[in-house]
Amino acid sequence: MSGRNWAMLIHFAVFAGYVVPFAGLIAPILIWQLKKEEFPEIDAHGKEVLNFLLCIFIYGVVAGLLVFLLIGIPILMALGVIAVVFPIIGGIKANEGKFWKYPLMLRLLND
Image 1 (cartoon, rainbow, N blue to C red):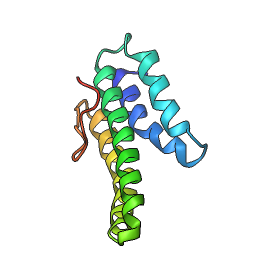
Image 2: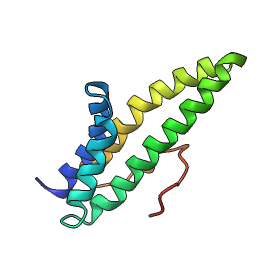
Image 3: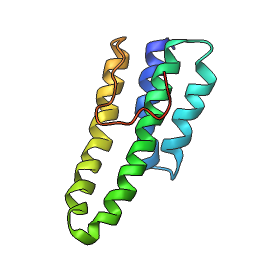
């Protein structure tokens, strides 16, 4: 497999969490750590996906607390859409050989 395919797989591996608990976190990290030496472009994609996962978790906790004020419900629905759409866009861009920064995400891991 080429570097583009591995980069795309890192983004799409997020969806493994919908099938197996915590697989959506573990699979991208494993691919990133195992392939970043072989394909240098993988490092940026791995950091971006991990930033995305951490931010979605943080935003989800905050939105969960805001459910009591009723504003958290639409925020949680928006996060659900973002959790599906952003990895798909990131994977498509990675397959095209481009790097896509996920919008609205905190840069917790530096490039």
